[in-house]
Image (cartoon, rainbow, N blue to C red; front, side):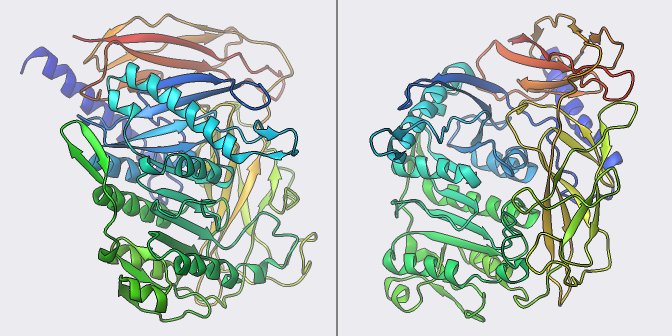
Length: 564
């Protein structure tokens, strides 16, 4: 074995050994609890400024690009931006494995390239969404052009897109589908009953979580979750009016706005895989999109109230008139959508809650969900505990306040949803800054299983993590990182706080992860353009107990990986 092959093999082995090192501490935890913002690899990044908004303001955005490590030619890009579940989705190993199999890259916009308030028509005093969408997609293309040049994968500028979005970034999916339908493999709308404004050609998957937590205090949340008739009828109306629109639909009665369970992650992964195989065609280096042969798909009515025990049918135009049901690209996805909806829609409701550090129940007053600031008392200054329990009665500010609530006799599992901390197990978390700082929200959630008569439920909780701004200031000294040759397995990082507190690190961009003060290099995609820039950040959170110490200013430095 020559020296180059030896170092490449050693680098790969170290990378997977590092991943394995995370497992023992998390042994026995659910896949949801294994989610973490830590060490999500993005090899390249591109920052840009948009000053084309209608009010002449400027927006700064950064796109991060992940390319599968063995990919010779990209055939498409998943596109997501900072919101709630997206931070988990862009690093989820199930999704990345599927992307590698289909030669799909992932674009992660944080801060986002969208700007929802900068395209106001000053004469009409209302948003001009068409202008917003055009400005946003033009800005996206500008940064993709930059990534095409720096990554060594020129096709980044031209390959098709598959946008995915939740909450406000449903509008990002709208923008790409409306402005460039010819370039969209499909579009995925996560958790809201949302459809694109006009486009009725691009394949669309809408996942509706019926247990909406926003405003759950304003209505009887025990009844709203199974009131799905109006939402589902709107979908059937669209299928009837647009029989050639490949519109797929999933109704999840166990989750609402915030949650994206492993069940739904697996469904989205299968959908993306099926759409990539059905739509992407290559001829040499040219990638094109094939139209779907809809007659090869399946119609599947969902077994929600009023539609129980409906069949799956092969698709043809005459079926559409008699059965205006959602369309699915294969029978497996149709059957799984029916399984997800086949629940006890008459089940009773249970409700998890959270205990603050003072022993009080966190109030459900953040638009109907709990929110509080955890007190960090551990000696490391960054570890804290989140406690959940099941309520015996409706909260004071809810419709039906004080009325009895049943619950399954078990403690809810506490999960990381998004934000600047990683789960350690048993409700314990540690602050873990990453490339999204400080552009993302911070949420955990309490997940409780159900039984035959009580529905499962997921309750989110917003955590405020204010910076330590009082006490003695501190400063980080970060030793220079020298350039390295490709094939180098790892290097040591060295940074110090003048307050004597331990310094932590994260990789902003580059083919590397950080582990215990070591930078471990991950396999480099074969067409990557050298030199490759790696940017690493050093941070120290400070201490909020005496003697108090302020958070240090984050120090970043970059170095190059050069070709052997």
